[in-house]
Length: 422
Image 1 (cartoon, rainbow, N blue to C red):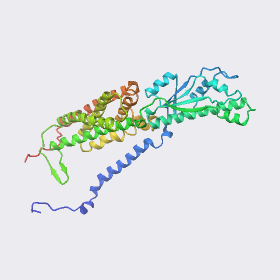
Image 2: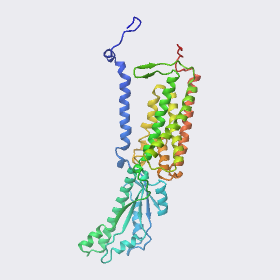
Image 3: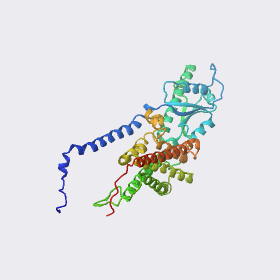
Image 4: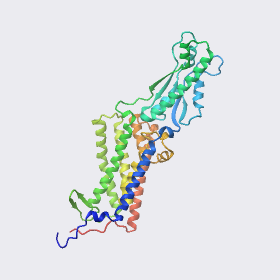
């Protein structure tokens, strides 16, 4: 140590200073609390939070009513299901079979309960001697809406079918009080419930989860890429230290305004995102053989989605400075994951998350990716809205970022005093 070197401070001495503890302790504590509340709050009770899950109800029964009844059995079941006010977990939609299939194919419903043609006749056949064939109700699933959402719809539809079977059984037993034990067993639960896939997806679709994870990859690519570019530019321009292991450098400060710096970062983001999105698709579709169609459209939308996130990250970093990375993490990831509707349906999360879903980026992006991967890239499956919201998000990021940097520049709020070149 030379005479010019200051005395070295020991860690033990610094640990006794309360001010050193305050900021990291408060911030890490708040982060742990908020992350726990936000993440777990969205998935802890999906059945309890479930409200108005859209499910199709198809009544194709056109048979004549049974003796003593003014409506056929299918119509009575449909009326009972639609009129059930004991629970608001399902929002039943009375549709034709073609309409129900169209809404399954566009992801507008999570499943369907189908009362087939001739259902009344099959119930009537049970009253004849020697009848053994049970009437059938069919539950259709929609795995493209996610395994949990499709499962919830299936459970609700199956329960409605079972309740209908019980009601029909009580009527049949009342009409045939002298039935033997074997016949009573058949009549007590006369309807068979079968489950079929209403809108199939590929075997390599992660049971409807590849859309979510692929969307997450795009958000992370935009988020991490934006921060890496921002830090790299600041280091190269001399506004941040470059420290790798024991090596430390500080480059000469380049005199540049905040607005021009942001323009540089956004331009680099637009170019580098081309590479990150291409490699993401290469890994998922080619190396991992993820089921995917409409590949050109998937690439274009993936690029626009990741770019919108990257531009938003640059704007937030420019506006908030050192805490920008935390702010953008909350905007794009912490609040985005539980409100995306990609793993837990939005109808099964608390109202706070449904509110966030109207504008949180991850929900918009996941709707677009899901439509491309599972629903034949239909605009009414969420792709049209996804394009609109992605464009709005990118425009807001540009407007917010440049508005803030122009304001700072006009106020003369420079980032650093330029450092000498030697």
